[in-house]
Amino acid sequence: MQQTPRIMLYTPYLHGNRGNSTTAKRIYNGLQRKGYKVAIFSYEEDKWDEEAKVQTEKADLIHIIHFYRFAKWQKQSGYELKNPYILTSGGTDVNENLFNKRDRLEMQHLLENANAITVFTDDAKQKLIAAYESIQLKIEVINQSVWFPKKGISHQKNILINGNPTILLPSGLRKVKDIFYLMDEIISLKSIYERLQLVIVGMALEADVYKVLQQYMLEYDWITFFENIPIEGMPSFYEWADIVLNTSISEGQSSAILEAMHFGCLVFARQNPGNASIVDDGKNGFLFQDGSEFLEKFNAVQHDHELKHKLITQAKQYVQQYHSFEEEINSYITVYSNCLEDRKGFVKEKE
Image (cartoon, rainbow, N blue to C red; front, side, top):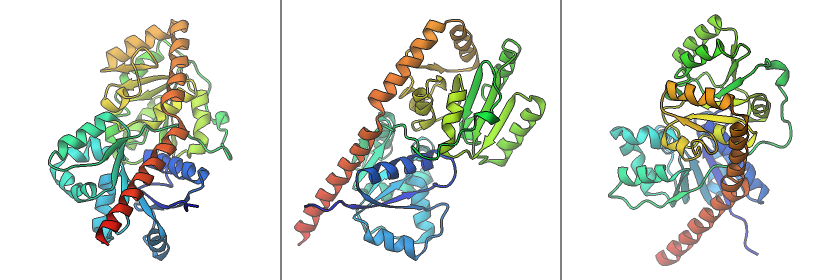
């Protein structure tokens, strides 16, 4: 009987409520359910110690999340990859670092020596191919899925203020997330919808962004910020929300949008390739190019209950059909198997 391979999962973040930590926890949980032995190391948060080294040496395959962050950590730590490895995009590595010449060069060695590279969208795949046109990269597109821990879900509805409409913006406080992009429009909506409530949930990652948010909250008591809510606590926020926003300048593939669709929230997402890979405008949510388009679509759907119901229903169906947890994990397992088979052939040829 063939032994299940041991996997070492490297992620930049695990302990904070960030996109990469959600991805890592989801993959880790899915592999464990399939009977895989998985160890996990957060290379940006945890100390590189003897235990991490031993776990890595035992692994048949290393799975690394975020090209640029790992390449940078590897350079700083002096760690040399000896095991076969696959890479999964962290989002900003493709949407930001790839367009910086120095960052692109820093990632190149890691990418060209990977046994496989996985990205969430075809747009990300095409960006990588264009950036490294002289290199043959092995790239697979694997959609993200929706996953929440079954046990220990925190019910936090008692800390959320009832309103109509209730708007949720799940986002880390970073410039790329551009959380103030629609603030003028939402303030104007408050004069029409007197019970409107806006809740922002995420990590306070950049002090200057947090400072501006604090100023807004001092002026408007209907804007609330919850910091570092664990994934276990997020269902309560989605259940509270009528509408979920994404205002990011760029996205890999937003797990928050998928989660919102899963919970029956109406999604409004800023037009960018990552968001457009999930949101089909007017079919399972809305895309907007600017504030005026957002306002037009927001006001129209508030008075069209049939359209709202249709969008929410189609969004749930879309997630079930194209972002299955089972399918995502099976896709990674297929990539692992192919990499290890290729590795066997390579070792035999050398012998």
